[in-house]
Length: 144
Image (tube, rainbow, N blue to C red; front, top):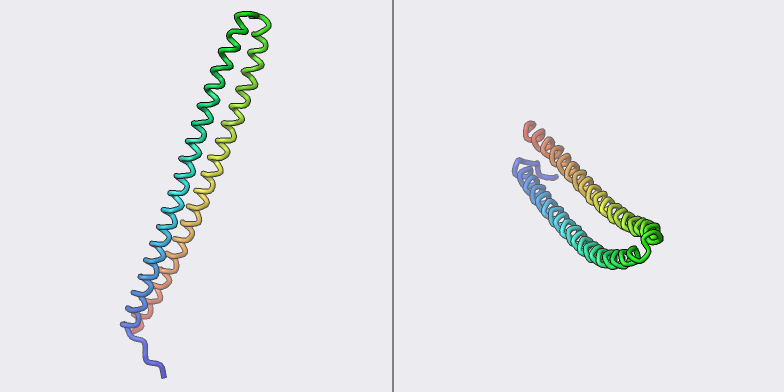
């Protein structure tokens, strides 16, 4: 015949559950910290790459502007139309690049928000389980 359950059993069970929840919380924090660090590293690398690309594009754009200015001095009327077209192409390319960067940042933001939602849901589930456990423990201790 099994021995009767007493308050020491509940105390031990509560302690075990607290330890397990503490370990789970620590694991979640470590995972969140690692993910955050990875995201920061990715964002930092992406930002550095973008700065390099933009710097190269700026150097190229300055070079092209100087060439265009020289052509304008030679043939003002003919070069004016060509310059407008050329800047339109360059601006469209920059818009496209900026749009791609913005979309990438938006996707990254969505990933972070999804991760936050998942973590929030996990914490809600853990809180709910803890509440149910507390209710069960309190209910049993009231009966005893």
